[in-house]
Amino acid sequence: MKSFLKGTGVALVTPFTSDGAVDYDSFEKLLEYVIKGGVEYVLVNGTTSESPTTTFEEKQNLLSLAKKVTQKRIPIVFGLGGNNTAEIIKTMSRIDFEGISALLSVSPYYNKPTQEGIYKHYVAIADASPVPVVLYNVPGRTSSNISAQTTIRLSAHPNIAGIKEASGNFEQALEILKHAGKDFVFISGDDLITVPMIAVGAQGVMSVLANAFPSEFSTMVRDALKGNFSKATEQLKKFVELNTFLYEEGNPVGIKQVLACMGLCKPYVRLPLEAASDGLRHKIESALKQLNIMLK
Image (tube, rainbow, N blue to C red; front, side):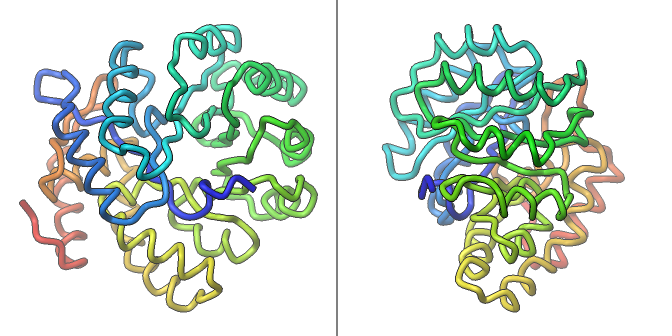
């Protein structure tokens, strides 16, 4: 198992200014905040980073800044995926992988490939990648599922390290955990089922909530990994109401509003997303007050 993938990774947002530019100062501030909060690694340019709407130059700048800020204190996972296999590989050749520990690649979306197409897509990426590849299965976003059988086949590839599984299907999760290679890392892709996922064998989570609550979330995950499920579950329950609001108007609209309420970045997103409505903002503020979070 790639030990650096055990525990809590945070799927970082990309802060923007009111005119839509990348807010690099806030990105640096957020990085320091989550590192000091105790997360095990950070994900740069994941889908929570609004990667479909950032330019290649911006992605490079964010990655360079992440390397500069982390100073190898924690590993960096870089997000690079899509539905054009050849373009992903071409883009990969332009990335400086020095300081990157792994690549997270979301399953192809929109074109709904067959399982054989998904398998060959990931084999091509893994063959070309200079660092280990983590699969990302999120059927609610991609409209296709990486089946357990396909994941198990891919787990045999020497450069495929694991999967971020966000299907919410426990039967599928159990099948993967039972039959995938012993060094294959199973990572929860859904914050609210992290503890039960760990109970059946997951090694951690790539979290959205950890942007705002790195200390609480990483402590919860460590408790679960130690088998202290009662304590971990009590912490998890505290996030139930807030988590519901994070996705009400699309991700990362909700978490950016949370971060804005906490003074960590502004709530701005790029079209076609819009910043949280007044109604959603009020719901989030109310939920944060229940968590005794001081609003900025």
